[in-house]
Length: 457
Image (cartoon, rainbow, N blue to C red; front, side):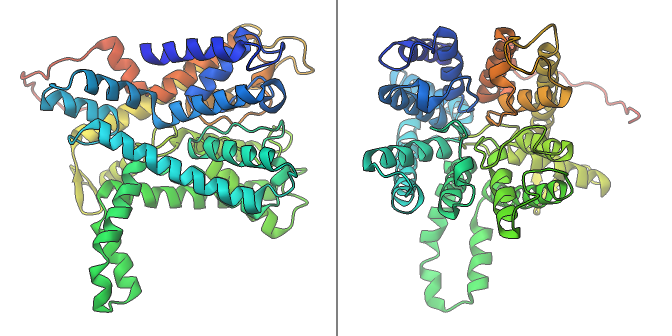
């Protein structure tokens, strides 16, 4: 937490300097933008392409990479380097803080994460440059637009160089496809990517047996860890359900964004927004209470709350937490005393952690919405002087889930409202349990047992 605050403070001073921004960007605007970048959220109260200089945009991209790779990962790596003689227990604890990087050493793993990310972002940049942003005539500007948006997408930040984000590329399948792929790859996490790559190598000898392709794919999935299987299946399920849900809700919305679109455009828009809503924050259509139905916005709130996967660059309660809760519900309905997912029993501590994360996150978002509703929260200058509860809840969930989708609320909030969002972004990126543990401190497990007693539920 201290390291994060220090990076934000230094980044604020740098971004507010004339070298990085125009006169319209003061310390407060720089503070909000840097906080949003470090937490890879994407909410902004300035126009990135207009208010930041070229050096300022490069600085912002660097902050996004820092936050996307994990500010906590960098801190723990430095601690491991300084305290090289730490015991196995401490290394295991640090590994959990980094989504279980493993006991083989945080440094090598972090290096592989960095190399993987750079390779993925580099490949996406080449595709966008050659086939995506072809409307940009200047080669240097096209390259920077391609690189910046790949950095922003892979790190699930959602920052765009244009005021309309990616609305101008709504019908461009290459831009939609590359950005969506960057979001998904960054969101599932390096552990899953490494698991897929490792199993790909191990299956090469099996191809010589001339097994059916379906059998090979089934065997490949079985060789993956339970974590990887849950992440992949949850990701595909949430993307599909989200896209079909948005297609259904906005189909019947009068004056909605997809009302006048052809069927393939509707499918592309809803699919992209379903992917982006889970912590990325890009939008290819205008997003407001006038363009989206209340049902569609509520569906986006649910997707933002679930978020990306552990070890990924996104926020939210994580897909595995959602899968565990669904598994616990199913086990309860089946009358089981333990949670079983794909023929594997989930430890009680993991189930309790999932319940704790979900409940604490929901309560924190409610607290944010409550604070956002105290007193006047707008500057008084814009045309809108107040916002309804759905707009406030959507904005709070977008900040806490480090998503960055905005209904036009953020820039019109006064400093109290924007401060609430900054705190929400910071807490959402670090993790609600980490925040609570910082207040409560680490306690040794109690060896005292207590008698059991049933409660009516």
